Image: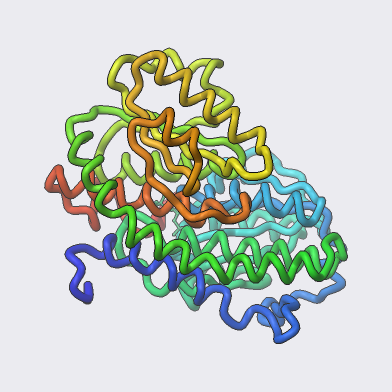
Length: 370
Ligand code: M6R
């Protein structure tokens, strides 16, 4: 079943490229226009949508955070992201023009299910982004956009995360198409860029495994890790931190890099490992420089810095102790490559500790209780 891999998690990380390409497949026509007929919500209804609320838990909620950056930019409507278990208990503002997007790999997460039931009772439409055909969440939603990542067995979600980002982006581009908030060419270009991602992800898998493994060996005694990112790198930092804590049982915390001086930097002492997701340096990206100065700040306090950066970034090379390189791509698509080394790193750290990576203690693959 594991097809030669020694764990499902390892196998599933290596299916990241296929999860992306299969989720794209058949979602656009020959001209490059989005074709989401499968969704069965009238185009007119989509045109009227004036707010999106994503409800989800864990890794799926980080997909929501990534999607917020893209969809607000493309569609110019507010996107809120709410942990499903918090959503129902705060009297959220829901109208018939609100689209609630329930993201779930398993389709059985009780917290997410209860949130979508609440949204429907209040008269909002619910669209599920789900990896499991015929599961409860899509059955109870108004519409579903399936991720085609294939079955995910390991408790730690990996390939499903990438597929969810692609599905959420397809939804965003579709909304932009029906609302006319993007030029057709821009939409086609974005689809083309998405089509290029599987090869880039594959390159990370092929070229970075050794340095990631050596870094894990060097870090095998570390008791905690901080993860920092900005913009779409922020949810990637949260996801990297979650992976490492859930399968390697290491205390981790993910932060928005800009928060550093508002508290977290107090945690940095000599030798503390800090993982930083660096945005592209191309196009005089201000965010890049700000993240590089965050690296300098933690280094000045003795941190050991492990950095995920775009190939050829001279600053990453200069300031980081270790760099995991990823190919160039547009900023909004970078989570699809940036998260991959963090998945591999968590896997290696857990393996070095002799842990069962597929079945971490105290956790279940689908959480069917509230
Ligand atoms: O099946 P779902 O996507 O609804 O699951 C949501 C979370 O329980 C899940 O992502 C969890 O955080 C994973 N163990 C993360 O690796």
